[in-house]
Image: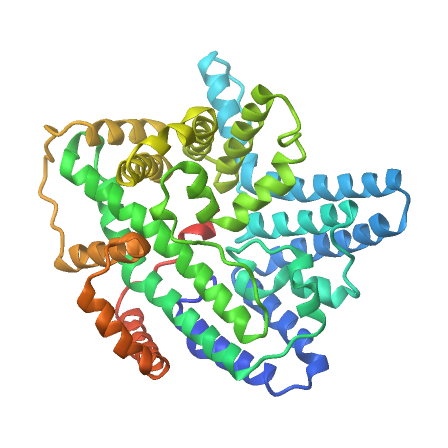
Length: 475
C-alpha cells in the first residue's frame, strides 16, 4: 500500500490541499513561511515519520556549515564544505546503495566458492532523498564559490529544503534561484490561475497518458524474454518511452504549478525532449535540473573543458555513468548512464559535425531510436532482460508466443502522447492555423473551461482506477 501523500491521490487533492491553501491564504504574510514549512513536514512525514528526523538533522547541520563557509577563511570554509558533501553523500550512499553493494560482494564471494557472506540489511529508502541531497549540496558549494549567500534565517533555509511541491521528485532547485522569493514574494491572482492550470495539465498527463502507457509497458516487460515478439517488444518500448516522459514531466508540471500558486517561480525541467536531433540536445531538454547539476557540480569540479580532450571525454562519460547510478541501485541504471555518456562523447567527436550534412528527419530518427533503446535498458529488471529485449527489437521475424490484448484506449493515448511529444516539429495545417486565430480571440475563457473539464474527467478516473505512484519516487 502506497503511504505517500502524492499529488494524484484523493488525500492530497481533497484534504491536504484545501486545508493547506485555506490556512496559507488566510494568515498574515509574516507567517506564510511557517505554514509552508509545517505543511511540507506533514506532507513528507506522512509516508514515513522516522525519516523526517534524518533529513531535518542533516538540514540543520548544513545550515550551520553554510555559516562556517561564509564567515571563515578559505581553508576552514573548504573543510566545512567537504564535511557537508561527505555527510550528504553518506546519507544517500547508506540508504540507497548499501544493499546494492552487499549483494554484489556476496555474488563475488559466491563466485569464488566462499562460505562467508555479508548480511543484507533491511534498509528502506526515504522518498525523494536523491533530490534533497543534491539541493543541500548545491547550497554549500554555491556559498563556497561565492555565487550564493547564506539563508538569512533557519526558517527560510528549511522552507527551501522541504518545500513540498518539489520535495519528492524535483525539479532540483538552487537556493540562490529562489532566495529573494523566500524573503519577499507576492501571490497574485494571475499566479494562482496559471499555477492551477499548470497543475491540472500535469495531473492529466500523469493519469491519462503515463498511467495508461505504464499498464501496457508493465504487462509486456513482465513476460518471459522468449515470449516477446518483434511487435510486442516495440510496443512495450514505445509505451515506456511515453510513460516515463509524461509521468516525470507531469510531476514537474504539478510541482511548478503548485510553486506558482505560492508565488514561487522555479525553472522548467522539460522542453519537449523527444524532438531532439542528437543526445547533446536531448540532455538540454530532458530533466534539465539534473543535467545542469551534473554540469555545474560534477563535470566542472572534475576539470570541465579545462583539461585535455581525452580527459574531458572520460570525465563526461563518468559523470553520466554516475547520473545513471543516481537513478537507482541497479546495474541497468549504471549501464543506461554509461550508454548516454557514450553517445554524448560521440556527439563531440564527430556526430554533431556529420549530422550537418544530413536531413533533420534522419538525425531525429537516429536519435530517437537510440533513446528508445536506452529506455529499454532503464526499464528492464536486469541486464539480461534488457539485452534479450533489444535483440528482439532488432529481429522482425521474432514472434510473440502468447496473445497480447491491446485496448483501444492504449492506441488512442499512444497517438495523443506522440502528437504532444512532437508538437513543435509537426507540420502545420492551414485550416488549423485559421481556426487557431479564432480560438485566440477567446483563448483565456476557452482554456479555463478546458482546464475545468480536464480536471473533472481526471478526478473521475482517479476515483475509478487503481492508484499509480510516480516513477521517479523510486529514485
